Image (tube, rainbow, N blue to C red; front, side, top):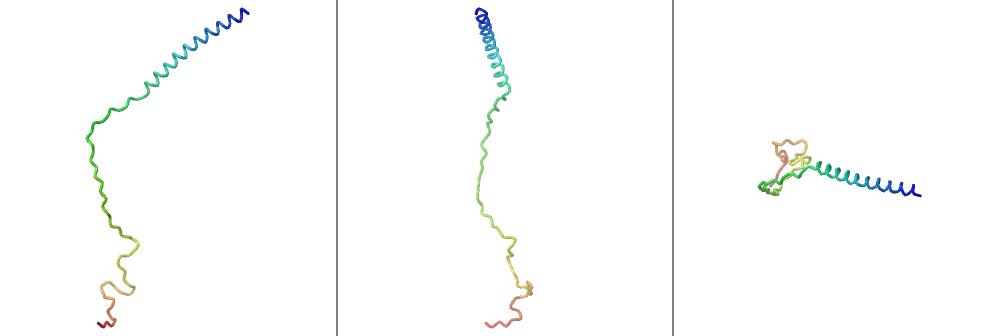
Length: 88
């Protein structure tokens, strides 16, 4: 029985030692992690840029639809009614 008590005491001392080492390692990891984080950039002191937004309507023309059409067989320089009888 005394043998078990002695082993139990040794295990307690070993656990205490391990807890101390874990705390030291935890502090080391924290300091390493803090060292890897870059500091934030300093704030910039610049004058505000003025931006003007205007909505200007744009004219749009459909490219596929011809603006001026002429019947086939007629040229642009000859009036359509030429050759036809026109009575006012």
